[in-house]
Length: 171
Image (cartoon, rainbow, N blue to C red; front, side):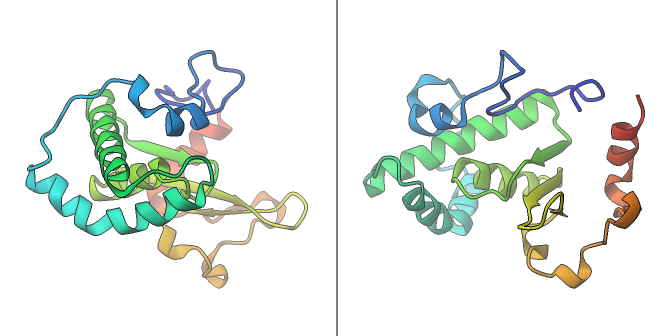
């Protein structure tokens, strides 16, 4: 994929020296810089109201380090600012998730992408050999009768990311 796309951010990609360790990204939040967008910003306040409760649950399920409520609020805000700045500065128009967002920061990334109408593609490994699920919206996960079948590599991709699939096939 990196041959056909300008990958700005990647996590746990061992072939890329600029790749960010997802564990470090989650645990060592104070080690990266961001532009403060102002916690009183109405856009942030609305985002916080809509997503913080889910973020708390995801943060607890990480099982890494438990943080108190106020530390989680700060963490949420820092990720929010960092991700918004990256998306705007790098003009990112597609985000590919190797898994369903479930760590906290990836969930914030997904929710901001949806709010900004940035295309998302998520993959989820099935229990069957060489099979996986591909979705563009978390709300679609579990609606398997609506997921296109990929027999004989005959993918019926939704129109809004057919261009992505074509780029992946072209050498």
